Length: 167
Image (cartoon, rainbow, N blue to C red):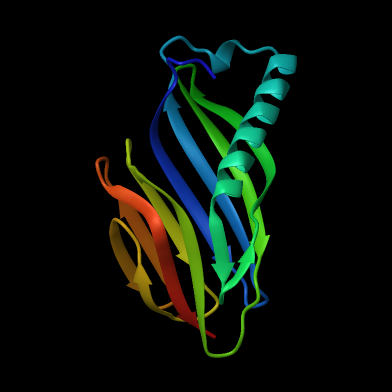
């Protein structure tokens, strides 16, 4: 990725199933003033996807993800690069992991390095049961089993974050 390509927004969709599978679609949107992505050949695009996959997997491997105290590892399954226009590319990541859920209260935990958000992002979590409590940086709204997170630039994120939900 060119140094001139800058992230401008990200959005994540997380679906948690009652059997413990968590499926994610995370999309990063960029400003690309030199049309770096638009100019890539098919071979270069394939290499770029592989590099992006390796980089995302590296960052996921630095996180501690647990469901009900049992640590699990997230895996990048698919990376897709697309264009809104020649100056606005996006990168989609399909990611999954499996934890062990149980009847009653469950807790999803994610611990990662503290950082300050450089661009706005949002996440939408859909759980198989009611969200009961949470500790997340940013603005959170809960609608029964759906949790909506909005993070503004300048927000300190990271450390230990968690969401509790009931099955």
